[in-house]
Length: 113
Length: 113
Image 1 (cartoon, rainbow over the protein chains, first blue to last red):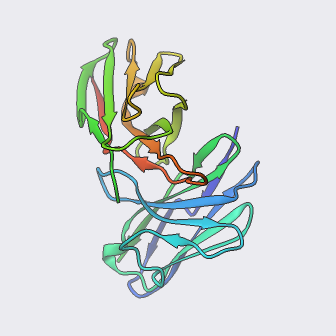
Image 2 (image 1 turned 90 degrees about the vertical axis):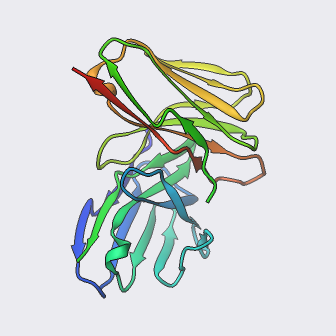
Image 3 (image 1 turned 30 degrees about the vertical axis):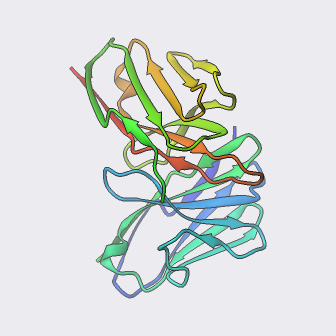
């Protein structure tokens, strides 16, 4: 079945630094990837949609300069949280669309201290 | 962003009991999906529904795509300990090339020993 690998699974960083999260589709080509954010005990909220070779489309209220998304190939998308602050601490999950549906990565727990 | 109304928010049941949860929306969807999320993990697809009225089973799980296209339910029969987790519905609205998923608010299932 379709597998999406997301790394790192956990990261702790200092305020003001940047963190990069990778999302790879291992056995299929993903023309579209999605990035979600999930706060504790809440649902998944879509942050942005990225298509290979083009600029990401951000949801309303999501700062594109803070959450940089790059989708350079059909199997890799990255999310960089720039100048991270404690309020950016959250669970970030990617999803890749290819074939029959959307497959999710295992998530990245970001803690900004 | 938009969210689907999912109920109940939480359930406390005994092992062996059946479980039922549902999602409703004010707008129609072309696809309904049901996911399960374990702590610290990404959602895993349980059942996908593509046609109004469709009833689909996956082992002990059964889900239906409402005739109005504005609702869906998920039933779990004879619950077992590994059913514990958070269940999310998700819908994909009509529109060519519309790949976005809207997620429900989640149902947290707990099995009382």
